[in-house]
Length: 420
Ligand SMILES: *Cc1c(COP(=O)(O)O)cnc(C)c1O
Image 1 (spheres, rainbow, N blue to C red):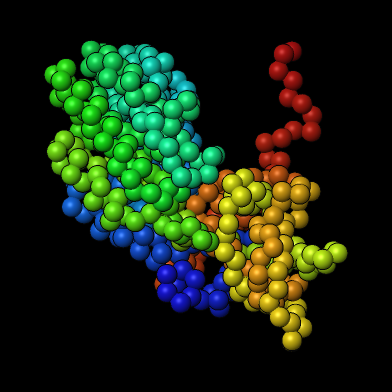
Image 2 (cartoon, rainbow, N blue to C red; image 1 turned 90 degrees about the vertical axis):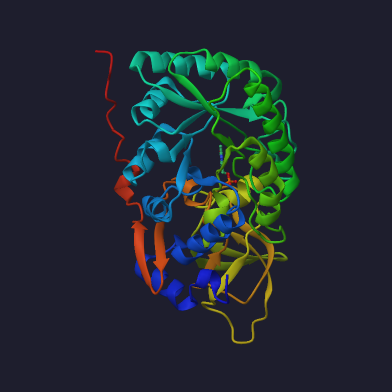
């Protein structure tokens, strides 16, 4: 991404930290556009639509930027539905996925005329057809299949092999498709899968897509001719530490012939690929502390702000933007970068070799654009971080830092008694 991080100079990071404070998430519009274009180029030979996976980063400004680029969205909750409508997306742009959609979420989806509801079980389908009947609405549905493909990613981010809660088992999908075709107000428009996250091996997608194509043949053999799309999900790896990115051209080359044979449109649902490496978390060093043989940098971003290191043991590169209070002759050294929270899992990096940095220094935790802010919480009554978008030489606040009284806005010192 060029010489400076995300095409954003250290001077801009310093300025953001001065004006907005820390911890702050900073995203680069140029980096997002760059990723969008790289993906679009790779799949250009296949009829396709990209549905950005909103849970990776759901800030309205990020959604607006992607909408302007022509993205659709993939959502997994009623809250995300409300968000994408607020950001200006309309029904046909939306794919609704998720294993536990409630009746009221399904109602919201039908009222918004979403383009595709990806059904993940027979029982969900029963609930959906009941809602469709009640509202008298036609629903475009897809079947999210569990294609039983094992992937090379962290156990918490695998979703596509047998025995997991996700998707309809492959051997039951054909029968479900037949039931769908016989159900009033249901139109079966697609089949799909989502294998997991941070997947580096393109053959996983090829194997899964081949199984989906066999299913398409089986469905069509019943005279069902309403299929329009085949959705290979998201999970495309970006480079993180020593992990390589998924080769998008190899991915496209692997699935294109199958797509062409079926005549279906390719749907893809990337989250991390679009925004992961387009964001950093800026954090200030509060103290530098030594204990026995260890040096700690205690920073102002905790696991409530950025959970990935603790939750997935994720490795994120850290850049020293400015060194703060260090001795002139200090050498690079190994440090644990830890947060202020009372949990021993509260760290951003362990035993990391960093340029000399002391109290007041500014760090940029890289690769924090996806599953960073969107997974953050207010644990320890810490207001959530601010978010900033840099576009060319300008930067703008896209979410102000949460205020203290936001923390208890919906609480009441005196219980609101409900049963008298
Ligand atoms: C989370 C998710 C994605 C996006 O995963 P990334 O690893 O961010 O690309 C896509 N589709 C579905 C159904 C998801 O749940």
